[in-house]
Image 1 (cartoon, rainbow, N blue to C red):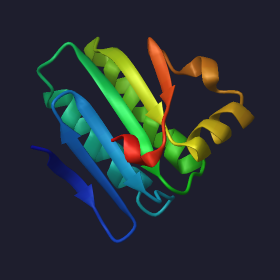
Image 2 (cartoon, rainbow, N blue to C red):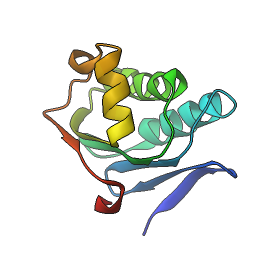
Image 3 (spheres, rainbow, N blue to C red):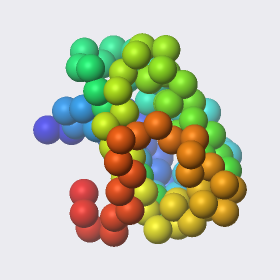
Image 4 (cartoon, helix red, strand yellow):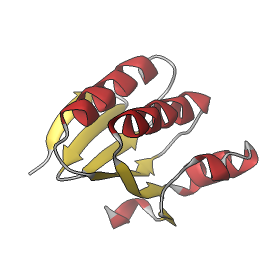
Length: 117
């Protein structure tokens, strides 16, 4: 069972077990709310590790990267291990173009198609 942490017409953030799932087309208009919703969930998370699944992100921007970076900061503060970051092709391309591949401390970064969730 997944919990919806944030949802509007263009994007949804859900949590299931140790994973945050982001789908849709996040942008600057909802980045702050998405970051806050994910941070609140991470602060309450009882496990020792988390994963981020962004393979359902259909449109990327620097706002999406900012949200992910805020979540990663919270994992560091809580000393949570980031097990996996799963990215859509468009997210992967943007991260590589921005030369941020080394910023993500996951043991494994998977590049998956949207149907892999």
